[in-house]
Length: 99
Length: 466
Ligand SMILES: Cc1cc2nc3c(=O)[nH]c(=O)nc-3n(C[C@H](O)[C@H](O)[C@H](O)COP(=O)(O)OP(=O)(O)OC[C@H]3O[C@@H](n4cnc5c(N)ncnc54)[C@H](O)[C@@H]3O)c2cc1C
Ligand code: FES
Image (cartoon, rainbow over all chains, first blue to last red; front, side, top):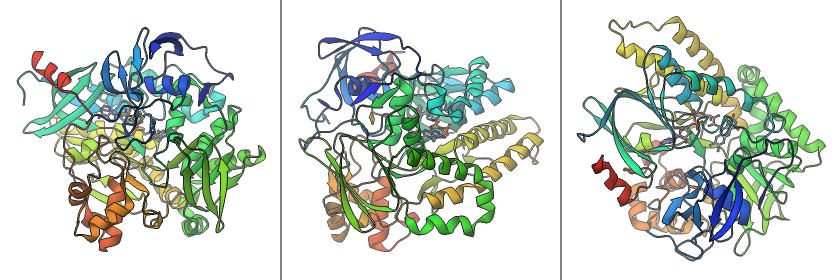
C-alpha cells in the first residue's frame, strides 16, 4: 500500500521487527502501524465487532483503528508506538475489538 | 490529590509549535516547565520528524524547514521535556491541576500550579458512505507516513475533501514523483468565489495563502492531474477494502477505480482535555466546529491557558505566537507586582496575531464544507465508526425523543467506543441541531470523562507502586 520513496531521502537506519513471527527490516523512524502498512498494507488489521474489515485511519492516536499486539501486550495503539530492534508484533487478524 | 504526585510550577501539554514556543519563553525567564508529548520527538503535526527528516526539503516545502530554528531553541533551552508521555487525565484542584501521565507503560501523577494546553488539532470526522473501509485514510495520516518514513502510496490515490492540507499533500506527492490520479475538491461552492470579493481586506492579508494555493493547483494541472471542483457527493465502495470511488460532479455521478482514497475535511481542535475539564466551548460559525472559550490572554480557566490550534485553527505561525503569549500571561500571574498593561513584547505579539487571524475568515470561507452534508447522506452511512451507528439509527433515536448528545449516546451507543466520540461528536451535534431546530451551542456536546487516552488496569496499577 505504501512504499519508501527512492527520491531525495536520507538513508534510514533499519531495525528488525518480528511481524507474526517473521523477521522484517523497517526504518526505525516508523510507528508500528506505519511499519505494518508498509509491509502488508491494511491486511490483517483487527476486525470490527460487526465482523467488517477495518484499518488505520488517522495515524495520530484519534481513531483507535490500529490496535495491535506488541511484545505480547494486546490492543496497543500501533500508530503511537515507534518500532525498535527485536520488537514482536502480532496482527490481531480476524480478532474482534475487545471491550 | 495523590500524595506521591510530582510537583511542578508549570506543565505544558504538547510539543508542537505552540507548546515548544511557550516552553522556550518560560525557560528564558528562568523557569523550567515540564512538557509532555505523546510523540517520541518534538515538532507536533507540522514539524513531525523534522528533527531527523526522512524526506527531501524540495518535496516537503519551505514551511516544513521553517521549524528547524524552533526545534533547535527547544533543544537548547532548560526544559523538562518528556516525550512518549500521554496525558490521559487532568483535574482542577485548589492550587492548580492534577495530571495523570502514561509513559512507557507506567502512570505518573503530576501536580502543576499552572497548565498550558497546547494539544493541537485533529482531522475532522466527516461521514460518507464507505469511509470505514480499509483503503480509506485521512490525508493527514498519509502525510504522517510521508514525514515519518518517506512512504508514498504504491498506486496513485484519489484525494478528496477540502482544506489546505489536501492540496499540500497532492503537491508533495507530485514533488515526490508520485502524483495522485484525481483530486476531488468538495468545498461548498457558493462561498468560494464570492467571499474574497466581499472581504478585500482579508484577501489582501491572505494573499500569501491564496497565491500559494493557486500555485499548487496550477502545478497539479500542469502535471495532468485532474482537479474536479464543486464535487458534492462521495462514496467509497468495495468488499473488504475500497475498490472504487463514486463522486458527483456537475450533477452526474462518476466512478474511479482506486485502492486508496485519502480524505481530508479540515481540522478541528483536539477536544478531549479541554472537554474533560468541562471548560466552556462555543460553536464557531466560520470554523464550523466548537472552540474552547479563551480570554484575550488565552486564559480559559484559573491557572489554565490554551495555545495553538487546540484553541482555534490559526496555523503554525499563529500557534507559535500564541505559545509565547500564553507564556507571557503565565509570567504575569507570577510577577510580584503584576501590571495591568501588557508589555511591549505582548502587544507586538497580539498585533501580529490579529493580523494573521484576520486572513483566516477568507480561508475558512474558501474551504467551507456544506453544512447540510450529513443530512443528505444515505441512511446507512456510519456516523460513529467505533460502534457502527448509522445516520438512520440516530435519526430514529431523535424521533423517539433523543434530545441531546448524551441521550443519543445512551440510546444508540454512538460515541461510546474507544475514540470517545472524537470522530462523531460534532456530527451528532449537527444532526440534532438540524432536526430539533436548535443552535449548535444549545445542543452541546458529549460529557467527556477521563481517561482521555486508553489505559489498561496494569498501567493504572503502576501508579501506586512508585
Ligand atoms: C495530521 C495533521 C497534519 C498537519 N500538517 C500540517 C502541515 O504540513 N503544514 C501546516 O502548516 N499545518 C499542518 N497541520 C496543521 C497544524 O495543526 C498546525 O499547523 C500546527 O501543527 C499547530 O501547532 P500546535 O502546536 O497548536 O499543535 P500540534 O502541532 O498539533 O502539537 C500538539 C502536540 O500535542 C500532543 N498531544 C495532544 N494531546 C496530547 C495528550 N493528551 N498528551 C500528550 N501529548 C498530547 C500531540 O501529539 C502533538 O505533538 C496539520 C494538522 C494535522 C492534524
Ligand atoms: S491509526 Fe488512528 S489511532 Fe492509530
